Image 1 (spheres, rainbow, N blue to C red):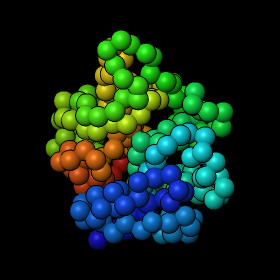
Image 2: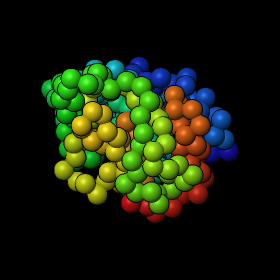
Image 3: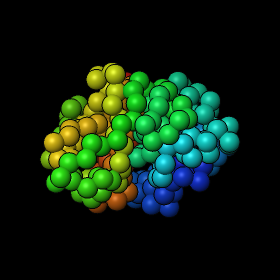
Image 4: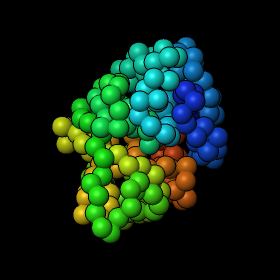
Length: 212
């Protein structure tokens, strides 16, 4: 079974992510050690909470460069929730720069009379790259679980792999770029669809393929 390093920086729901990866047929290893990230077959960056503390925790543990190195190596990499947000350049939520491997800024949802902020609960995906291996046996309009007030506004539309609509606002729900994948929703809380996504990621770890 493949080993998948789950990055521990005190900002992620590690137990749920690990259980989902185990169910999908992988051996998760919770770690903050760069050498473990490099030895693993795949890497997951989970995350909950606010942008600035998350970035600060990563940098306090000297994990930013190892994350960049892992992504550059071609190893399958999956960001989840705040783990997606940290990959971008900046966020309106704070002042810290992000990791910056993806172009764009996190924006806050605009208030509307009919919506709540944060965007919390089940919503339907609109797939933009339906042939991507991450979406195997996942379809447009499948339901997944979100908890976020900020979304990624990217200057590179080619990386958008799925969107979601909250009120009148259609925003990024997932991105892919080569071996890098990230989702704004929580697959570990998204029932059958979320478990299938994690299984698809594990399958990509087992059999790496060149994807966009």
